Length: 174
Image (cartoon, rainbow, N blue to C red; front, top):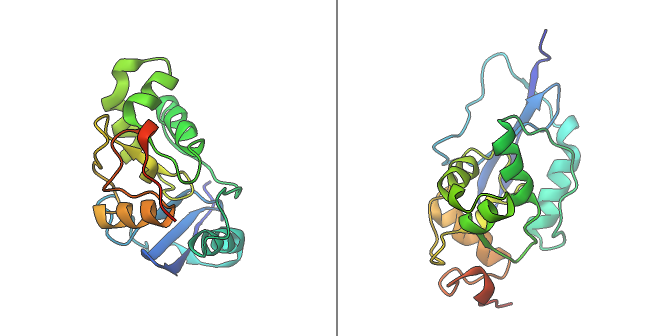
């Protein structure tokens, strides 16, 4: 029998973030405007306790006091999705990679589109930083939290999204 889903909402500079998961594990983190966002279900239980460290680390990230998350989380998806999400989690604060870079790191240069689909399905954005992924031509491409949120997160990490041409020629400021 499945454990109940516990959740908490946290106000942030990018809106109210909904975090939650089965038995208090961090299984999801959703932006308020995401097309894939989850809505609170009647059987869920509001409880901030299991998410205290997640909230602390997100607050520190938004205050520019934290650049690497180390909260435990559970990624539910296919083996390919999990491999992509592991690659995302390895992108350092203040850096970007292209979908092609991630596909190549996974050993399949032709898998850029599949990487994009897995990126879009990322259940824990910010912590698993899908906002740090750009198109092969250096352009900003879709983001589940909305393009304004992606731009805000990149600028927060001192990446000028108007100047990113490719991952090797980032124009950093700040």
